[in-house]
Image (tube, rainbow, N blue to C red; front, top):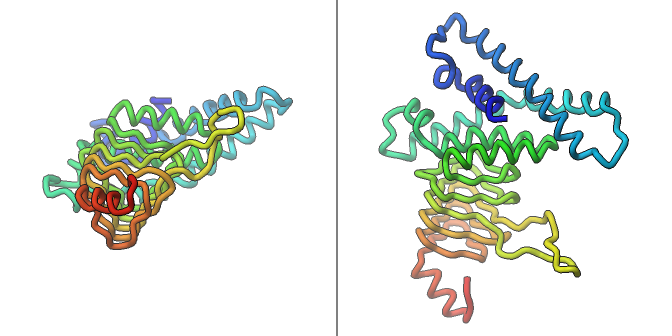
Length: 266
């Protein structure tokens, strides 16, 4: 799967990750050929996952193969949209970091962009019904960058993770447009529901909603299905388990004072 991911990345950004000798005349041919080969390999992997998931039924191989073809065709159709989202992420990183000298530097050097390229691919696979392959792609990114984004997380355009190491974003997190996170931010679950036998109940919305134009600084932890309102700023090291109205500024001192006044934790 790693080879498929790298081929897709090279096809999305051939000038950066394609072969050194690539010329303008050969660019379109390279992209078309690389995508075709990557999608052919992806169809095989999608088929394998579908067969793993179908072990207890009698679905015919031909039906699974047709389903794999349909999934990969839909994925291919979405590649231009994925590229457009990634371009907005790259622009957000360039405009949001005074240390960035060029868009090319952002593409080559920023771990947040490395993670997001792979997340955009993984999220689409997840949405199309192949969650295991999506998790594999996510874990490739996690190993490469130290940024752990579940492929189920929904992330809007112009998303920027600055520095990035230690960022964790859970499966049901929903992130709006033009959001910025710094290193070691966690968007996680507060608690897990259990059944009568004490087993964790799968699924359910358990991660935060981050609205548009929010900034969350280093080391902040936001837990549970809470909403951080549009335009808010969450300070470094804050531990937050409640909704925040739009336009709020939350710091460690303010969070501690509110918790004290309420007689409990946040």
